[in-house]
Amino acid sequence: MIDWTAIDTVLLDMDGTLLDLHFDNFFWLEHLPQRYARIHDRDEDAARHELVERFRAAQGSLDWYCVDHWSRELGLDVAALKQEVRHLIAVRPHVEDFLARLHASQRRVLLVTNAHRKSLSLKLAHTGLERWFDAIVSSHDFRLAKEEPGFWAALAAVEPFDPVRTLLIDDNHAVLQSAHDYGIRYLLTLLQPDSRREARSGLHFPAILHFDEIMPELERIDGR
Image 1 (cartoon, one colour):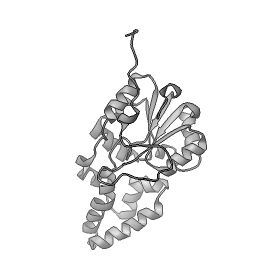
Image 2 (cartoon, rainbow, N blue to C red):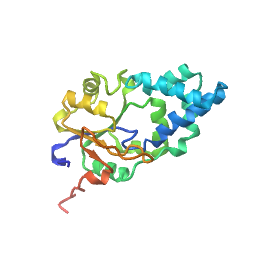
Image 3 (tube, rainbow, N blue to C red):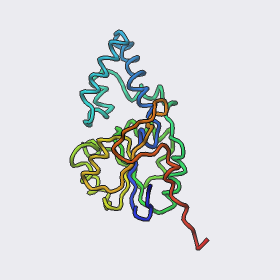
Image 4 (tube, rainbow, N blue to C red):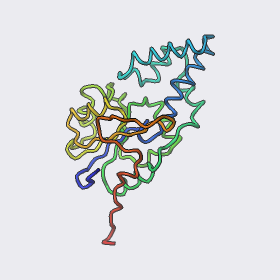
């Protein structure tokens, strides 16, 4: 599926790609509504319905991913609430081996995420994945979500890459479409971003279940 000889730069999403999306789905759809209802003395089902509608209205914008935005909007400390369920943060199968092989291959590897820096710090501290990346980029640094026009050009201005020799792996169709429109040649998505949900079908971009399907070969050292 991947001709690794044609790729110099690998851009990797975090949530739903390197990390199991179960943490985020559980937090936003279960834990946060429960805590919101308790803190504001609301019926839990009514609170969940309200929050889902508010989340849907913001979907695709930078606010949708912004911890500070939702803390202000909901009158609670979202970052602190995430700490309460941090034990659910999990690295997807074969990710560590995949990242180690990329690192050994001398390709440039960037983590490029829509996650707010507070969420990013929590997840990196919990997983230790930061050691594998040449750079870690949050879309909040550019005030543009990855789906939005202009993001990839803004990224390339700070972290130069050749789109024709770049691979992006992301679970978000809108992000992949935006990258495609910019000219990034190699695009992959995930069949099952959340391990507790059914695998997706009818995807527009090529998809893998796990990273062992595209593992780069270990390169020889000193002719061995």
